[in-house]
Length: 76
Image 1 (cartoon, helix red, strand yellow):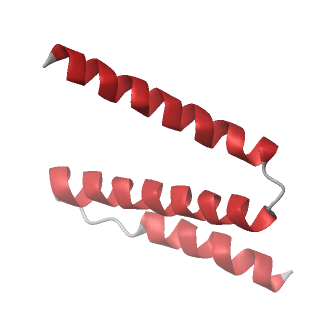
Image 2 (image 1 turned 90 degrees about the vertical axis):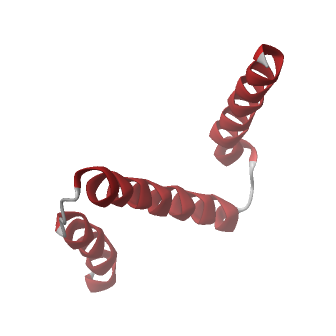
């Protein structure tokens, strides 16, 4: 059991390092933007999971700031 646990940790570390290095070695701007948006949406989903799942607090402040970020570049 302990060996499998260590293997999972090593695999996680390798994946995190690979994702951290990816923008510097990739020539494709499209993949970098796509991965960035995936990480942003995953952080948003985790914050909603914490707010609604564990505390039961409904907060739309995250949605407001998230929407403002997407509206602002279009108005420039």
